[in-house]
Structure formats: structure tokens, C-alpha cells
Length: 533
Image (tube, rainbow, N blue to C red):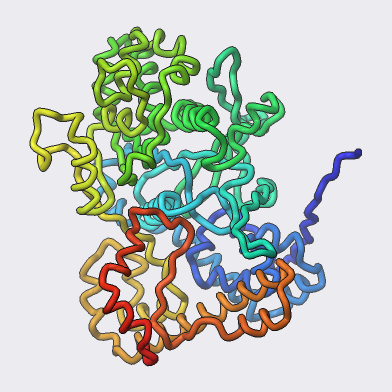
């Protein structure tokens, strides 16, 4: 059977709108509502069908439509306004420049994460961890914080959910076409893809480096699906959180050790390494090895130097959510590596053990992260308390409240999470400072000036649109699984925009305490049976 190839033909952009291509390769457009409206304006229905991907949008658009847009004075003016705003965004002084620029001119923070949730058109994330990482990069861009991201570029990303004809949940794994995504291959001086290599048992695995431009921030992603690797090794970056324990250790070696090597290949010398969860903790052993090799340090000296510039954010509140590897897997993948660190196998295993002398204890990635970082934090005050309780065994001599795990409450990148209507309302009463200077808390002093009626009107409008969206998705789902016309008609009436509605999305994990709603059955009964609510 002949190989099949899918080609996306990109139309020739007319001269008046040729600069539209300047917006493609920077995800700034993803959180600027005016920029989003520009792409929606090109072809509204197609924009939704292509998963909000401007590259695919222009690959599928009719050339005649582009000619029409080039003669549309309103569209051309809209484009020029966005490009001007984008130009100033990249060049204006940021909060970091003004407040810290003189003090931390050489600061570079390397932010490692197994997933980054930046845009629907870049599906390399699954849930909260990735969304937070994506928001960190966007916020760092707005504030001018000198961060560089490091992660993996998954061929399939995380699975999509759908219901089959019997109503059972199923999963699909759509493949990512990197050449039709808002990412770029990093090239060498002779225009070849820049690659790094990582030592695996009996072989070296190579990874290509891709760049995602997130406003002012670079996110670099590693991809093993290249011809230099065997078919088996090409699958390492196949799926996010896919495969067995052995696949997971391969991915985490690539992320941690490969990520450090990628930064060196890019000639980036970070001042601080931030581990967003324990997936990337192997970066510490690579850093220790390099410090020993290049600075003639002992293991203990290199360990302390590495620890002094590593920080760790833990997200997991249950032991089952932490990656743990049996000793035989560590022996298989690090045999020879720990010898370069001038330590034996038991000492290496001790880096990931609560009880170091216990030879039967597996290797815990969160413990490795905790032991090789100088600062650790949970993601809320309560999570800080839970984390100190979870890991108190690492500091048996301390009282629980003295365990050195702090808490920094999760935040969000505001512009990614509010609607255009809400953005306009805030700008009308607060001025543009809430966008241009997000670190200035005094901006929010005027929030009480917004009339309650206006705020509620925007909220109601958004709720109505959400219900319309859910109904459309439900109708499409019923059609795809061969549902009857009566089901489709009935779906047009689901949900009531006037009713208070609680919903769960994606992962229904136990720690989210869904059963709390059944704590007071009598009160629940009164709520559910109240026709006004």
C-alpha cells in the first residue's frame, strides 16, 4: 500500500493583508481579544472547525475570500491596529524592567513542566498542571519576568473524550501536525534542525527542539519522533501520560536530563531552575554531574550548588499522583550515570527515598525534587499544610509546622480567562492599567464603581452563550453517535440559563470532594426541588 500524505496549501496573502502572517508564530493573539476577533472575522464557522488554529484556517480558506478581506477597509484597519499594539507590547518597558531590571539584569529562570496549556491549537496538556504552566508563561510575558519554558512536544497529546452509540465514554488520540501549528523548528547555523542526545541503555536517543513564542517568552519543546531514532524511541514523545512505567521514566529522563542539555545547546545559562511538579526532577542529577565535571567539584559540593538554585512546586495532594519507579528501572536507566557522579547505586537511590537505608523502597520523583531544591511550595495554604504532613518524614527532627514547604496560592492569567465583554467593562471603569500594569494592586480600588446591574448583565449574557454552546456541542455529539431526531430536538432545551448550575469537567478526582454535596441530604433536597432555583 502506498504511503498517504496530507498537504496543506497556504493561499497567497494579498499585499494589503500580507502582514497577517506576523501574528501566526506568537501566541500573543491567543489572549488578545481584538486579535482573536480578527481571525474569527476571516471565517467564523471555519475558525471553530479548525480548533482555533490560524495556520490551518488560512490553509483551508478560499483565495477569493482573502482577496475580499484585502479590499475590506475595516478588516485592513483592524489588522494594522493589532500589529501596532503587538509592536509596542514587545518593545515597551515592563513591570520587571521598571522594578527589578537594574538589580537582576542577568537573571534567567528555566521553568520545566511535563505539560503547558497555552491554546486549544497546541494540545500538549491535559488539565490543571498544564493550564497553570501556560498561565505562568503568559503572565511572565506581560510582566517581563525573564523565564524560558522547557517541556515535551507530544505527537498525540492527551486523549479526547466522546460518547459512543451506547453512551459510553471513549477516547480518541488525534495526531498533532507540527508543521501546521504555531510552532517553529529550531535550526542550527547551517539551517539544519537543532538536536540533542540523551544516553539510554545501549544507545543514544536524539530529540529535535521546537520553539513556541509566548509573547515575550520562549517555550522550548523536545521531540523524539525523528528519523535518527528507532521506531520504539520515536514513541517516547507520543502521548502525554501514556504508556507504562518504563515509558514514563523515558519521558522524564528526556524532560529533565534532555531539557538541561537543550538549554546548553541553545546557549541559555539559567540562574534558577523551577520544577513544576516532580516529572522533571532528573534535571538535578544532570546538573550535579555537569557541576562535578566542569568545576572539579565533589558530589557533595555539586549537590549543594545545584540545590541552591533549584525550586520546586508540588501540586499533588495524594501519594497515588506521584511517579514512583522500582529499583530495577533506576538501575537499568542510570547504570553508569551515577558512576560519573562518583557515587554508588544505593546513594543514588537515596536521593529518591524517604528512608534511605531501606533497599526495598522505590525511587520517588517528588522526594528527589524536594531533596534537590532550596525552596518548595504547595499551591494554596491548605495544600501547604497537606504537603507538610505528607513529607514530614524527610525532616523527623522538626515539628510539622516547621517543615520547609511553603505555599503560594495559584493565580491565573486574567486576560485568558475573561470574556471580551468583561474586558471592555473593566477597561471602561478601571482604565487600561489593569491590562498594562497588572502588578499594581491599587488599580482594583475602583472595582466598586462598576454598577451591579452592568456587571450582572454581562454575567447573564455570558451564561446564556455558555448554554447555547453546550447545546450545540450536545447536538453534534448526538448526530455523531447516530442519535434520533427526537434526541436532537430534546437537546435544544437542555440547561436553563436562569438556573444555578454546577458542573464538573475533565478529571473527577477524589480530592475534589464531589460527595460533599451529599453531606446534608435534607438541604440538598430543598435546593433540588425548589422550582425557582
